Length: 216
Image (tube, rainbow, N blue to C red; front, side, top):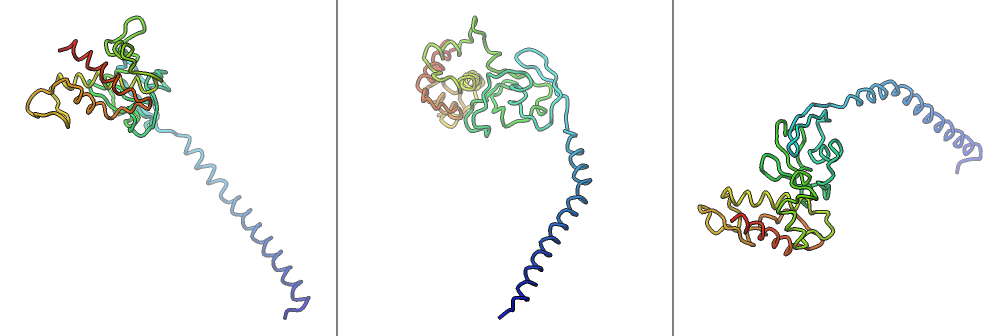
């Protein structure tokens, strides 16, 4: 059994060890300070690149962090808030825009990848005084409800009609060698990547069918 002197010596050892650890930690921090400062200075050099494209008919040139998504460039740099950031994982379709005639999830693509491209957002389809036919049909059939997903829904619907006119088949096309028919089944399949939490799907399909009928 240890004596009282042994216990006092043990307490002294713990205090000395604690002081030693604190001194070592302080010394390490002082030694690392210059290297940390250098790393912070190096980190301020954000890689950027100039990118030029056409947005809604207007030429735009931006100096962007190369990691900037097209969605963030539109919203944060060009202040076009129509395209929504929903899931930010390409699963909801709220960020859908039309690039060179094709619909894409703008949250999944980098802005610098579209140098020289032509981009159409919901702001470029129509105005409050002169709505695009698809916008007018959504209003008529109450295809928007809360409205959050509506910009992506409308951009996607416009592109869907273009796909059908171009003869591009879908998973529900009965004949892959024939031009797809503008049917409700085709629209539902092609619009399946655009999620509506309000559940206005039937109204959205009705709106697209009406516009497709005008084009037929």
